[in-house]
Structures are given as C-alpha cells and as structure tokens.
Length: 106
Image (cartoon, rainbow, N blue to C red):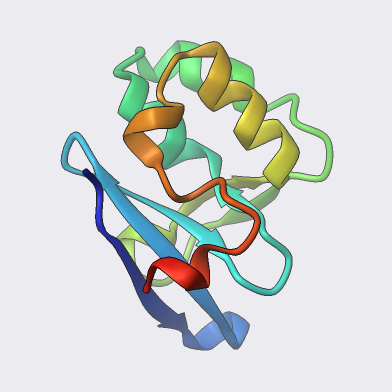
C-alpha cells in the first residue's frame, strides 16, 4: 500500500503530501489541496499528447515550471484530480492522497 510522505515546498511556503505510485511521485498541497495533475496523469501511463490535451483545459490550473522535479507540472483543483483519478481507475493506487485529512496517515 502506498506510503504517504511530506515535503516542504519552500517557494510556495506550504507543506505537500506525496504518494508514490508506479514510480511517480504525486503531490498535494496542504494549503489549498491542489494536486499535480501532470504527475497524476503520468501514473495512468497515457501519452504526453493525451495528458496535455486533458490538462490544458482545466479551470483554475496553475503551471509550475521551476523547483523540484516532482513539483513541476500543471496543478489542478482537488475535486478535478479526484474525478480524473476515479475516471482512470487510479484512486486506489494513490490512497490516501484523496482522503479529507491525509495528515492522520503520517
């Protein structure tokens, strides 16, 4: 079962929860619960074109181009990330990233 870890994202001054799934680190911000959608969809194993096609239309997305490798990418809202994870059947792989309060798993 995936292990939840944390990292401090200094540039953004927030803690991030992280789960490793299929060798990919998927992070969730503690302050606003946004999730790295790029890494989330990488877990699915889809092509870059398909992934970018899905993610470029996300409302409220935040593009991060600098910083640690696992924090770069397009961050999407918690609800959309949860929906996509369910749609592509990777929710279980990412447990407990989508629970209300992941800190209880630390």
